[in-house]
Image 1 (spheres, rainbow, N blue to C red):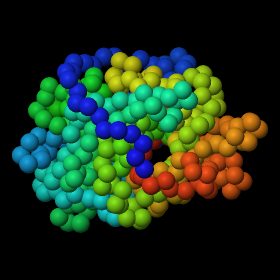
Image 2: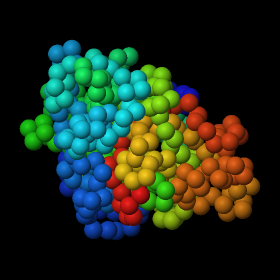
Image 3: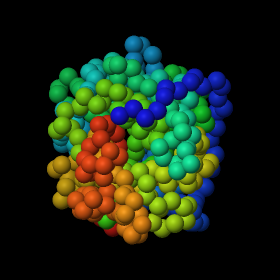
Length: 362
């Protein structure tokens, strides 16, 4: 479902990087890394939920002979995933893929994103739906983050920068909108994390691509329309609430209206202010470790829920932390799709690799 118009080109950019600050959900906290046993994407070099940042290994590849830089988060091969510290995701081969040649550390891709458009989000009076919005990156027809290798292995390898630099981490004219810092010499990239929930646990993840232009603008992700053709076996549900409670310091704030009104959605993400870029607190249906690990997929079928007027009036629209809560409320009519039907996929997918958990183990 297309919500938004296409974007205009970026004019000029500044090269920036700064020390991260440490406030999250409106309160002052001390910046700290997640304990390593909370990090399920083992290749991650540093994960800081307070500053909403993750540092990942960076790989240099090519597209038609031109330089691109990418990350790797999942492998469909269990031995490869264990060896490289990736999430094991056996079902991603059923996604829309592109072929690639070369080694995993230096892939030659068939397609790539264009990072030059300017991401925009202008909230309406209610925050969501927006008055206008447009994605800041658009993949060409060949591009997919899901890369099929000659041995049959599929990797989740999103491209996060193009060209030889210098790299723009302020307005993101040649980097993904979640790139906060990039160092090709040290082979690292710092990305903006998203926060959400799985089965009552507070989790953190990335958001790199979406098959809907509007979702890409909201997620600070690359718009890849062909991801919508991904097979059903490659997808699993994620729940996003459109009209949850709002308020920066409201403990029950959640959803797309909250993100638009309270969490700086209209601004470009920068490292020096990374802690102040919040999340809609979406709800995942599976996790890479624990009882649901066999069903883990990083490609999520968006289930957009709307609280009914009666549920809002009755005060039912509190923060939800599990998919079972959302579907139970939907069975009672308290949450529906935007067109008033029971909660179900609305027609687009998002690529959101899971990084770790903040509090209790899922």
